[in-house]
Each structure stands twice: as C-alpha cells, then as structure tokens.
Amino acid sequence: MNSFCLTNSLIKVNDKLGECPVWNDETQKLFWTDIDRGVIHKYDTKRNRLKSYNIGKKIGCLALKKDGGLVLATETGFSEWNTNVGLKPEFLRVYEPPSPVMFNDGLVDLHGNLWVGTKGPKNQAKLFILDKDKKLHIKLEDLTISNGIDWSLDNRVFYHTDSGERTIFKYDFDPQTLELSNKNVFYIPEEGTPDGLTIDSQDNLWFAIWDGWKVVQLSPDGQLMTEIELPVQRPTSVILGGQDLKTLFITSASVDLPEATLYGEQPMAGDLFAVQVTIPGKKANRML
Image 1 (cartoon, rainbow, N blue to C red):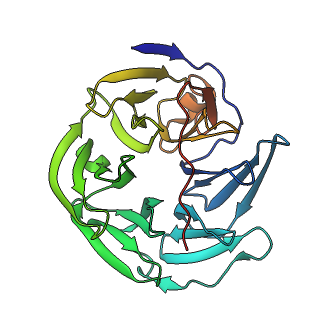
Image 2 (image 1 turned 135 degrees about the horizontal axis):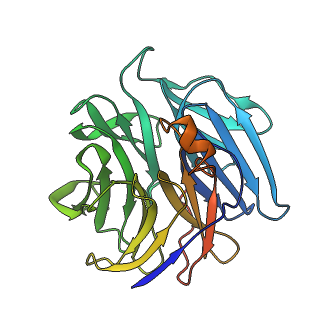
C-alpha cells in the first residue's frame, strides 16, 4: 500500500463546498463547482489560469455536452451553460424553492444519459437518470445524500455512494436496460464519510473521505492500494485529468468549519489540490 501526504494546494479558492470536478480532455480544462456559492470554476491547465463564474443559484453537479458547454443540475432543476452565453433558461424544473431537497453529484454514462442524485432529509433523496430526450426517470429511492457514482470498465458494475449511510454500494448493472440489481456494501470507512469518486483505467476506485482528511484508492476487490493524506478535513471529490490523465485533482470544502480552524489549522480548506499518480484515468462521457 502506498501512503504519502500533500502539504500544499494547487489553487487557492477557499470554496465553501467545492464539488464535481470534470476534466475536458479536448480543451485541457478542469471544471468544478462551489455548490453553496453557485460558482463554476474553469481552470486552464495550459495557461495556468483560473476563471470563476457566479450563476446565481446552487449547482449540484455539471456535465460536458458533445456540442460544447455544460449541463448543470441546480437546486431547482436543469439548465445549459457556456462561457459565451452564460446560464440559459431552465429546460426542466423539478423542485420549487425553498425545497429541503436539491440535486447533488452526477455522472454521464456511455449512452449520454446523466445519472444525478439528490440530497435532503433522511430517506427523501433519489438517484435519477436525465435521458437524451431531457426526461427524468427514478433509479433509486429512500436515499439521504446521493453522492459519487461510476461504472466498471466492462460497464457491468455500478458504484454508488450514499453519504447519509457512510457507504459505497456496489450493484450489478445491465448496460442495455440500465437496470440495477444485487446491491452489496463495497466500502465503509473507519472514520469519515465517502464522497465523490472516480474509476481509473485499471478499474480501481479513487474517492474522497469527508471528515477523513484523505483520499483513498481501492482495487475492484476492495483492497487498499493508496492513501493520500491532506491538510484539510473535508476533501469532497476527485477526477483524473491532465495531458496523460495521470493528474488526480481533488476538491475540498470549508463549510461549517469554525473560523478559528480556517485561519489556523486548515487555511487551505476549500482549495483545489493535485497529485501525480501512475495509473491514468478515463475520458469523460458527454451528454448528447
């Protein structure tokens, strides 16, 4: 098992709730969101330049579109966004504010569908599919904080985190019908809560542990491969990017941490971190 520490962040952003990093391999840009502040960050790795956009509402996750731009799952529903036009009118309203439930983490499958969960009071959250016709279908119910998801390389296994249960679950997945079956517990940390995750090109899982001060890599059979300790308590999500897909980008949060902690023990809380790894990731799927 490999173990090492990161002592510095890549970019000082002080996100309240940094989440959902997405790597665009065509433009070599990293996108992620500060959920609570309603901000989209765009980091141009070629120019080492960060630009941030406030869209005026909370953003649970974002997804790349094949024709450019992003699809956003917000606190109320779904919209398209790009750097030229900004936020387009909402094409699907789901929740009327103020709602105790909002959209959270999500990922696009091989068919171009967006799988996106919600968070809210216990057992009131769900996992949905937003299909290519922009229709919404329920896949899982009775969740609390639907979080990181991804598929195995053969597209036969589906991983899903319910942070309310502090658990990553593993399902059998039918790539034709998109049906989930045979739910099993894959991982429960000794401390902290699993959050966002990604799978690399050898089927290993990388994921952040909220309140765990670390990011972890597990093999498909659940063996601990790598542990990266961080100078922040609340890492939130991970994605593999960079020119060779071997840069692990890590988002983090400062939300609900005492002010004395932010200025003392954790001045990098909410920053973006990055580390080089040996096994590359996968290119992101895009919505049609």
